[in-house]
Length: 500
Image (tube, one colour):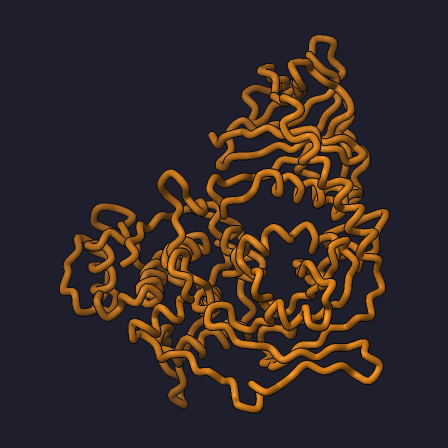
């Protein structure tokens, strides 16, 4: 049994699209995992997907995903809370006695209070075997939604505690069923099916589909390949299948941000949207390998994503737009018509990223102890701190980006993390480098995306130890890493700042 502790806090995330939520609710209802709050005049379940879930409802959903509902109903436990009702009594009593949950006070559970996105996502992550406690946590409570997006539990991490709904609960719960559990390698669906909680998944492969083969179109510019079904990962293609048709293939890259959103988020003076999307796929490569979407044996088909097959120098051999998740498909098509120079883009990216390994550990960077407050108002939440490089204060030649860092987050490689940050700054947001001059004008910023990450300020004060510093919040909820680099894309080093 997985033992969970309930913690409550806040985050800022969005509401699941109602059509997606309805589909998820109906799917879970068919498995007996999501119950309606009543029925309509025709006897159909009413899900109330647009209202906020209560703490009691979130707890019940958790117990169902853990396969513990019947055990809870049969337990006969009691509890000290005075604000529970008949239907939720056994669930709350079971969870309280098993250490899964605590109340909001000694005699009050808060059963009818609203559940938050952070709370429910944390529940689900724990049910999947991830931990947010101990010496090496996988995620933190406040970073739960971001972590869930990283592993594919939520689509983009766009959830809001203020707008969190039962529809969001349904979508997240459905997504959880296809997730691999942290230590066993089997999906949550398979775990519940093996326990007899839900019916086993059907193998929809027919004899005809088993015999299906890949084929080219007439002018051999489009290759159509049948997909296979993996019990843990869903629809996949083996790497061997792809290598039969693209023997020069070395890497498979996935674009992350959808094409319609991309121009509103990222900006560049040098690259087109199509080029930036490929660069983003190169930057994201580490995450897809770490999460397991790509292995030495197979390539997972991620719904709605654009896939790139590339050779060792980054040249794009073919692309494939995987159908969206609502579409049932038995084959995918790879097009060899490529209108961007992948080798050039790969070379451009590596020139920036490789400065990380070239300069790793070369410089000793630290923030001076001086705290400079140009506004003159005390106390302040943040101060200007000055940079020391190899023991000397430096005024010019450096820029930086601050990134939240959660210890133990997916066993990330720090060099690869720094490469990712460098790629993000110098390609996806290369209009955003700049600094605030002495009269408060932010110089060089056209895209707002990095505005809060580049808190550089000129200091025209003869008493200051340097002519430029950066705003640093003195008290912050998470650990931070500040990455330093030159204007032309050379990595200088980084500084780790613990939370507090």
